[in-house]
Length: 364
Image: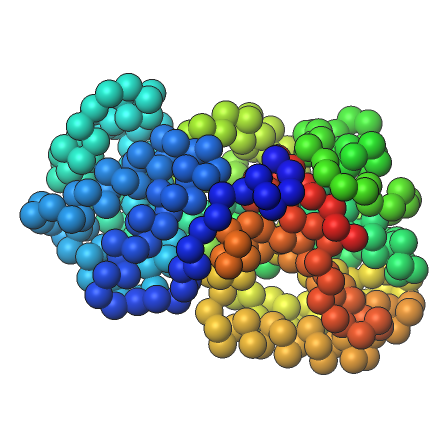
């Protein structure tokens, strides 16, 4: 994976489209996205669900999905249903799904319709919240951005604040080791090691330290609870076996020492943390990955206003940074961007990044 010439071209789809036809569009878009990402089983599942929705099959779950009141693509509606089906498969509760997940021939729409009808009560709660897509591999982006910020003269000791932390997997980034195009960061006794396929120049080789990590989520997940861990695993696309291994490693790490994770909205958390004292010689840093699309627009505005107000007061001894790994749906890629104060607070794109950390195309 490398330059944009190797990426599939997509027709732009408005994330916020709602109303007639929006559900069908969302499922078709998710199928195309999964196919392009090499997630053929997940594409097959989403395609099968779409076919059931287009049929005359009835039921409470199908009715709720067909009549979705919000924007189904922004709400990741296809992945909510797919996550529920994957959980049934992982738990062994729906053996009929086996051929689909093993890549064997099957009448996908018939199988999925039967499973939905038989397990509707178990599937309905999956519609009630967005996917929890925590992935440890994304933390390589945060580390690369910290190296870049340190190279810009910001204090190399970081106070990391994360919104949408899910289970807090990325809050344990100080326990992981990284090889970023040959630039190595992290402890020798790392819980996990990441070496994303690297394209372009390497990030600056700097000595950095992570002073603290703290995060929030509206529905935080306890990795030490087997039922909650299963829910996270259900959102992992089955093609990505390495992500299951990483999840197991994260569960072991959380069992040894839980991440500092609180239940709060993004706006409430950011406002409260920015109001707390900041140690001199420390860069306070807000970070998030594949989260912003799930944050309500009024909260996005509050977070942005709080960061810009705090940025206006930032000093070289107490700077502020904002690191984001989020989707650019106009090109169906994910980008790593940074804002920092003092320094103008202008958004700088550092890289294109795979959503699960498989590769990074460094631009800075």
